[in-house]
Image 1 (cartoon, one colour):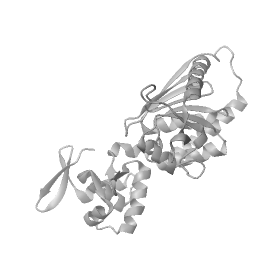
Image 2 (cartoon, one colour):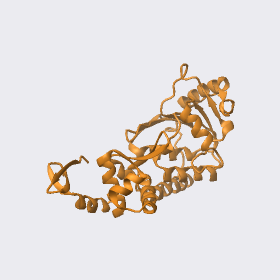
Image 3 (tube, one colour):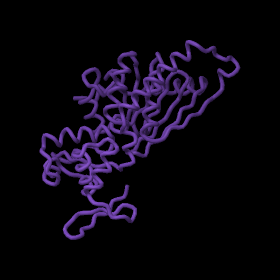
Length: 288
């Protein structure tokens, strides 16, 4: 959605695909996608100003601060806004509106649970065909919904999940989805070993959000180790579980990933991971 702000007779309007649309009409259009009137109003001001502090939002919209926090919670869950810490101030930044299609969390989570139940039912009713058991399968995923599905697929295994992680995946797939994903991981007692490149931001995040106290972490401190980025640079997430090797590239809404389903390939990648794991340093050695 491309907005161009102009002023005509002291009335603020936007140009959308060469058509003039009033601010109030845009608010109405956004409510069709599940946003409240306050959320739509706040979002349009964020688009106009790129990023704003809470008080600035209150001044521009006339919405009480108490209502702003509740509205922002919804925008964050939709995936069309994020919190940015700048020095001692917290600002809110808008994401492109195209991300809203990935923010319908309730329907998505419901479908994912149905998909999981269907897989269990399918396994109980079908026979494995020995002639196709070793066929390599390649699946591609795109966008936030694709990344969510890729992570959700890791819940299929009862074995340890091995992860090379750029850390902070929750901010890309949505907080509400990730909390549900973590809760489901704990119910299934999923264990994962994670290799990371340590940065000041990652260190702070690990100290703040750790299992089991945080609802957005399924990784225990003792299951995180550090690799020197000069030797092994980790970008995005690479995940090994069962007979699957998966990768997901995370960058704002530019998200893409794939899965290779191959027992032989997964075993090779798992062996490489375990070798690096033995040489890596426990993250606890870097925490104050």
